[in-house]
Image 1 (cartoon, helix red, strand yellow):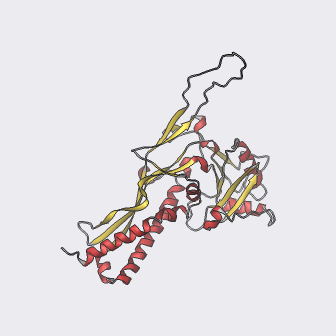
Image 2 (cartoon, one colour):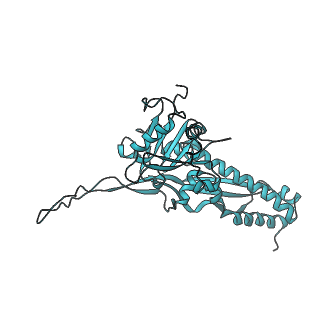
Image 3 (cartoon, helix red, strand yellow):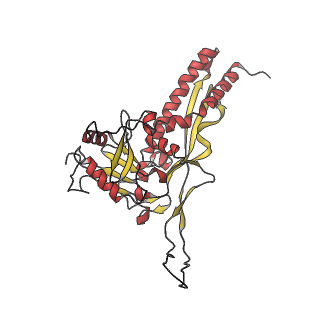
Amino acid sequence: MALTSVEKNQEILSLALEDRSSGYQDLVSNSKALLAVLKRKGNWKSYSGPRIRERLLYAKTGSAVWYNGFDFLNPVPAELFNDAEWTPKMCAVAVTLSNEEILNNEGENQLMDVMEAHISAAESELEDEVDLSLHGNGTRFGGKELGGLQLAVPTVVNSGVYGGIDRTNAIWRTSAFDANSFATDIGTQVTSVTIRPFLNRIMTQRSRNKKAADLLLMSPEHYAAYDAATIAIQRINDETGLGKLGFQTLKYFGAGRQAEIVQEGGIGSNMPANTTYGLDTENLRLRYHPERNFNKIGRALMPINQDAVVQYIGFMGELTQTNPLFQWKLYDSNPAA
């Protein structure tokens, strides 16, 4: 039995999305600095099973000894590893066309223009939704959304459960620094005078060996202060990495460390005001299900009680981390102080 005109056009929509679906991951990652860095470092990782698990090294063996001759060595039984675990979160955006719209725009060129507009609108909504969740605390939609930076790097660091582990455990805490109180010898608010000393002190406190924050996501207020703190000859614009993707970036050098600085703000931004996230991206992961990695879900569907066609783009996974000790937040609780 031959396909009807509407059925053919439904198939065209499905194929059009299939053709674009390989680009959805790039669409999302290249529009978000954190996701772009994680992808660049190979930290977009798939998972399987009902839970996402990250293996944590949380102790030493206690067996190290210096010795000579026939001294006894120290084979101490020890539990070294535990797992943090997260429940995967699911998100879907619909591309919806009424069959009236399809029929009124019949003809290959006309139909593709209509589909292009609807698909572009869905892609834009997917970007916005990921950005909102990435800067959120995981409580929207009844706790069904991805757990973002406000959950992963909170202001209150010693309460709540994250990854199935209680944050009263000191080794499972990130750090938070209030500019109004943490270093009053430097100042009590973020300005062009205090921003670099603040960052230098934090980077010194929250680093060890090669481990430290390598990405600084700044609100417009903090970025402007850092930009103003440098004169042209000192200002180092990052033309590689994130700079190539069009992000407004600078390079931080201080306290024996370096990091990419990105302004995370603008129209409709979900970045909290007067905030900088210092992120050790080596220990952050975007875990995804192989069949839900910002790609097309199934085939185009027709609702049983509507003359329309619907196709979904979706994601299933979570933002996780393996070591919180080098993740931190600088915030200005009283910018006018």
